[in-house]
Amino acid sequence: MDEVLEDIITTEVAPPYPRSKATLRMVVGVMFFLAGLCFASWASRIVTVQQTLGLTDAALGAILFSLPVGLMLSLPFSGWIITVIGSKRLLITALLFYSLALVSLSLAQNIFQLIGCLVLFGFSSNSVNIAVNTQAVAAEELYKKPIMASFHGLWSLAGFTGAGIGTFMIGNGIRPLYHFIFIAIVTIIAVTLVARYLKNDKVTSSGPVFVMPDSSLITLGIIAMCSMICEGAMFDWSVIYFKKVVLAPTALLGAGFTAFMCTMAGGRFIADWFARTYGLKRILQVSGSLTVTGLLIAVIFPYFYTAMAGFLLVGAGVSSVVPMVYSAAGKSKTMAPGVALAAVSTIGFIGFLFGPPIIGFIAGLATLRASFVFIALMGSCVVILSTRAKL
Image (cartoon, rainbow, N blue to C red):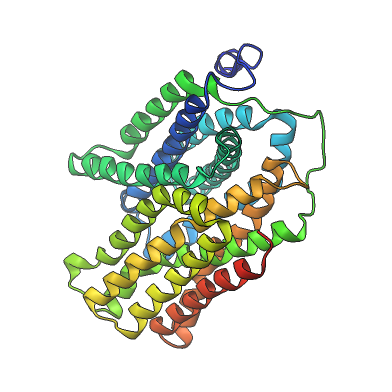
């Protein structure tokens, strides 16, 4: 296995930069797509795994918390690992392991095995995330213009693709094991073919495991955290909002989430142009404003078409915040790109992890509409922080 991995990496053979900047951009885009495909493949079969193991909704919710636990466990180490072995080696290794961890999820025979597999899946997922974003920063350096959001757009596109493949597999009665093996094979083949064209990093033999980020990176992390609270809430609560507040027909309960996902994916493909034209500060201000406006429309006018319009605006609002924040973090003058990205991700992911439970807590104390007002406040924080920050 070590010899195969070394052949894939080919550190000494590959030049410091790929043959062209277009090649690097294409290869990094492939890596983003593969990462999104693996994650979406698991998401599409969660219900199948629940039925196979006979899990209640409450038990499933508790078990799924294992995935963010794995993510959080990897955050302190990923930046350090990048400085020691480089983002190229980490990305290749983590993405291959990610695909194998996906297969392991289908082999879990009981709750404890599933928890362990989810922790490994989450750990490798975040390692891939930090490494691939570090490579994206390298591509931006070659292009000398913002292109980060387009990479995240490919991740979102992979989400649609993975959901479509999952629907096909379920419709044809194909077990998760064979479904995940297929995705793993596609991932391994793709990585083997294109990984040599990734950028080689400067590495050090050692370094501190944790470095305290400076104030600018902390601000970027808080902006990401506020946006991730909004994003996580939309992922977990949009269908429930359409059911309990909008009172949409059963067949249309997912309409709001679909609207949100469409504008989030589409927004990422045009966000780079806006960033080049108007600058990072302006796009973050507009993004936060769109999020606030969309949520308030959905809260004040909780009817089907107005809520749909509101969710469309929210998707457009959150689409560019995290990619732009990652892009800015990767250009830090005080920390290496991988370490800076790990620091910002650590702060930002707190929002994605704890945002949805907070929404549920507020909904329990008051109403679900009141909890969506809280999400809108997080969008306003993006506007305020980006206005005051030196970006």
